[in-house]
Structures are given as C-alpha cells and as structure tokens.
Image (cartoon, rainbow, N blue to C red):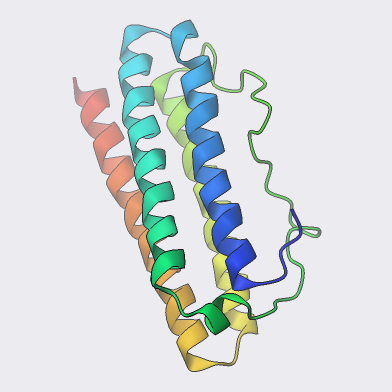
Length: 151
C-alpha cells in the first residue's frame, strides 16, 4: 500500500493490527498452552487496537484525512502478515512478545516520522494522539504479558 495521506496511514495501521491478529490466530494451535494464552491475549489486544484506530478515522475531519505525506515505507518497510508464514509457531511467549513489540515500535517510528513532517497544528495533534495510543498500548501489552510469565 502506498502511503500518501493520513487516511492511508490509518487504513494501513488498521490492516497492520488486523493482520498481526490473524497471523497470531493462524499460529496459535502449534504452540504450548502457556504460549497459546499469551497469544490469545495478543490477538484480543491487536483487535482492540484496530478498533481504536478505526474510531480515529471516524472522528477525524475529512480534510485532515486527505493531507499528503512523503513516502516513508519504501525506505523503512514494515512487513505486514498478509500471508502468515508461521512466524509465531513453536515460539515461547517471550519470543512472541518480542516480535510483536518490535513490530509496534516500527509503527511508532512511522508515526514519529510523519509527525515531524507535518506543519499543520491539528495534524500534529492527531499524530500525537496516535503516538500516545501506540506507546500506551505497548506498555499495557507488555504488562499483561509479564503477568502471563508470572503464572
């Protein structure tokens, strides 16, 4: 997907979270019970994030969504799991968490880059909100996964 506008960014991010949830679901049967519980938590978390990002696109003003941005993903590709390659099969819950968190950090890097490129204050506010959401959710996800490891 070519990222040209804020609308594209939001759609891409929704796809990112949905596809990550789908890949986790696909790989879930091939893991230990403990890892399956962690994966179910991550699946619910990714689905929740996709819904939150959808709400941003509903609440944003139409003109705001059409703002154009410089292409970022060509230089810094983030691989979406549109065709799950079993990336999470036979991994421990710690290994799964590390991969998921690293992917989220790439999304945060995208948002940070785009925020630095924009000059319109309400666009910065939108991207600041998206950044805060992703950062907050990584912390929440990590805390939840830590609870699984304590079990």
